[in-house]
Image (cartoon, rainbow, N blue to C red; front, side):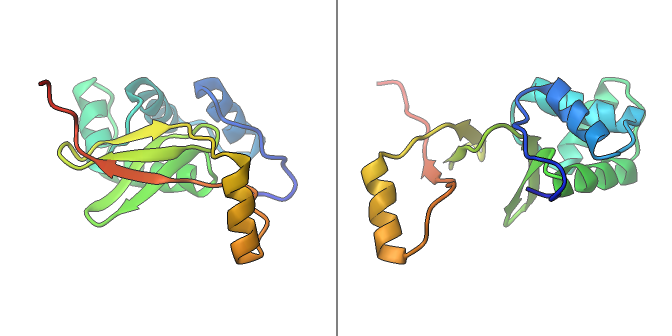
Length: 147
């Protein structure tokens, strides 16, 4: 939770993201709305440059600086997801707690919902002495080729 006074509510759709902005007192500028709409429409993780390029291809006039500033503000408040990679940051729409499949031949990151069996959670808690409240798993692999 990024703010102790606001209970965490899942962001499941664009409207939830817009509501969270308003709840946090963030201005819903035209540029901010463009970025959120793009991320929810794209349903993939994009770099700031890709977001800038796609918005401008759509005829939405937005500058580099505005894209970067809005991405930082939105990810800083937990409204969108920011993934740090060796080749830069990727941004995506955020949903309930989820894991990622990293495709090594396309560099795509796919969201997946994985629920570990309770026995595994208990085993990890016993080994570490830490009560698990949430988890994220990263999977890595290659696309299956047609045989």
